[in-house]
Image (cartoon, rainbow, N blue to C red; front, side, top):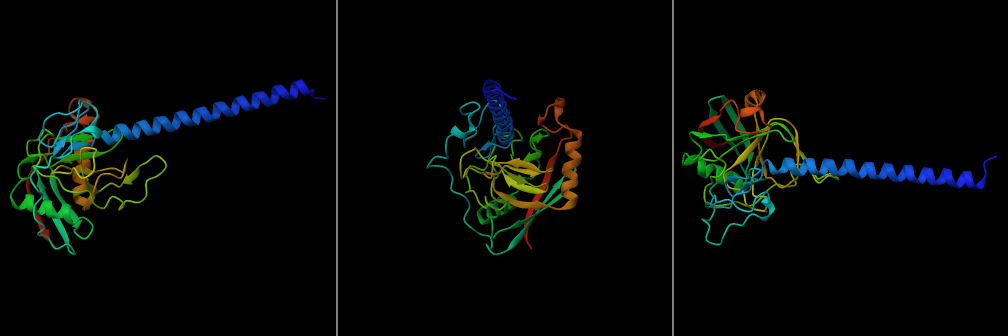
Length: 259
């Protein structure tokens, strides 16, 4: 027969085991959260400039507070206004990227992202993206190829910003605060603050979990997705998980047309 003292000890042991299980569950959640935060930093840019691990960039391309993209300066009141709306907000558009590693066609819906489509149309018509490098590849945490900086360094931009759009287009965020950006998705990079997209965008070549704060505005065709995946297979220069792609990618010409 179990004595009252033995029963008390058993209950105490069971309580201790439950506490340990809760603590381990909390540690696992914290590790997942930290992984998501680190991954998100990979596509944080200033208004037209990339934020590397050493810090973010403000809208004029100057470095801001290191490792604190959420504190990057907002565009000033004197920033150049975004282009006047010139696209049909009810139509669908096609962006064709001719690159040295293969052609990428991106389907865009102006009804969902009118400001973004209008900006890409405006910039492409001016030859803004022609002969520019895709400066960044990530192969850990998230899986994207980042392009759109005419300087090829991650610090360039068009001199204006556009508002975030379609942030609920990929569904409601899960308990970890992220949604899945499916392979083939094309989305805007930003500073970590709202409405700070410029010209830089990223091509998702493998499902990636990110906070729903990056405007998803297009979808690559199958051939384009494969071309990006082939670049990713070659990895990053120096063998890192984040940096310039080992297989250099140059956008030779970009054109946006109405379907």
